[in-house]
Image (tube, rainbow, N blue to C red; front, side, top):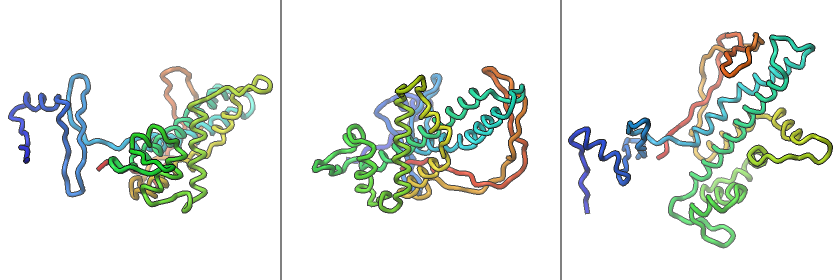
Length: 271
């Protein structure tokens, strides 16, 4: 039976329609059909195209790449000779490294896992160890390793483990490091040291390789989800200036010079 399209005749009717939880909206273009979210903030209801959390998560990890280089530079500077008022304390610099390193690892993994969940079919069931599993069961009960090694290759007909074994190992390592951070445990077996191992992992972390591997995995399955482009930006060599410690710190560590570099943009649409 054909259902008539509802048309609001006034702003009041439109607001009433937006408040109805049974009403859902979409935008139809030449490129496909896109979901529209009804959002509410401070009493205002508005509509917005539904974004892709995969690119939200990935952009957070990508954005901290320059920060971890800066943090390591500050740490190395703090270790040079006598501490001066122009340098950060080593403990403060290391906390900066730990912060941005953890953000990069955790949000890289979130992008990875959310993308894998998006690959799962909404209605069809996937066979695993002799049983047919629906999307909800796979997301809730199967391990990351099961999804990565078996489920995703089955539903996408692409096997990163076979095609790119070194990148596959990096992804497994990302999962392990994310678990170490999220489920951080004391490891005080000998002496007083409890977190030395995880601190060394974060200090020596190749965050750029992690972020680029996650990007490769996503684009390997869905090309052009995340793309590079050339951009001109003021950037340059780092220099230390006086630092005022406090909650509202004003920092600048770089002399500006114009350079061409590769940036990343994100296809933020879910069809």
